[in-house]
Amino acid sequence: MKDGHAALIILLQSLDGLALLEITKQELQGVLEHRPVEAENALRQCISAFKEFGTERSMYDSPEVKVEYLSCLKHLLTLMIDSTTEETQQSRGSTLQELKDEIKRVEAEILPYGKQKKPGS
Image (cartoon, rainbow, N blue to C red; front, side, top):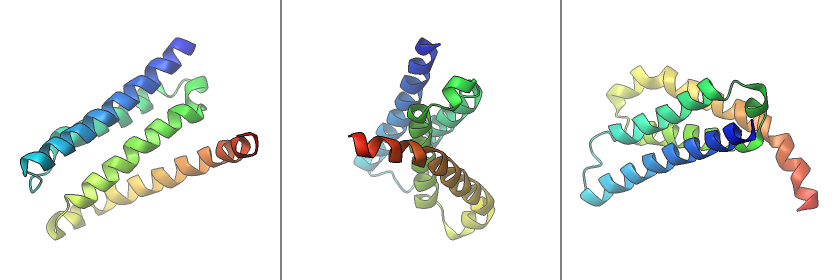
């Protein structure tokens, strides 16, 4: 069970890191006017992995797993906002709102863990 927990955290971190690497690569190549599809795909895989493997009770309740999931959500939201034109903003509006809502939900779930750790840190 613990191995699965660590594996999921590593998978989420790796996909999030891959997305950031793809974004940086495009920035260095000066190609950012195109939507970074590879980065978006990696972040969507990160979210899918959490939903698929994070449903096991011990992993779903893990603040460490949720922190990595939250990172993927925030990076995807930023990526979508940065690459959204006025034309696509209307069609993506509901998706952006869903991401924002999910971020708020996960942040609210993680908040109690952060408060518990602060006094003892």
